[in-house]
Figure (cartoon, rainbow, N blue to C red):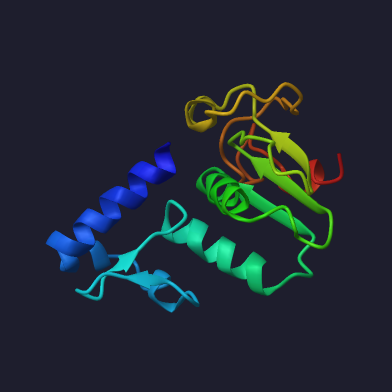
Length: 157
């Protein structure tokens, strides 16, 4: 639902306020096959610029077997996977940190981590995931900060 609302908002901005719609969208304008309004502003097909980028990469680079995302990056992965068919040739490993996503893509094995002290990640997690890892950590992935998610160590779990 959120990705459709974001796409609709970007489409409206692209038509009515193209200068505003282009702010911070330099990468989106370089994504192969990206959509544009007649004003030249990008239109997001898969929820956001990041989701469009992940979708385009997965579509063109069929050998990718692992996706890792933290917070908003996890949401971009979820949107991109939702927009792909289940015909990806390899079984993918999807690891998310600081945000739980729906585990509904059949070619993916999921490993999800949401810290027990991560209120931001909890708020971002719309998915009801039954089995996820709950380390004693907050939202940060900066290993220097106490109680942060130590991604390198967690990826071995």
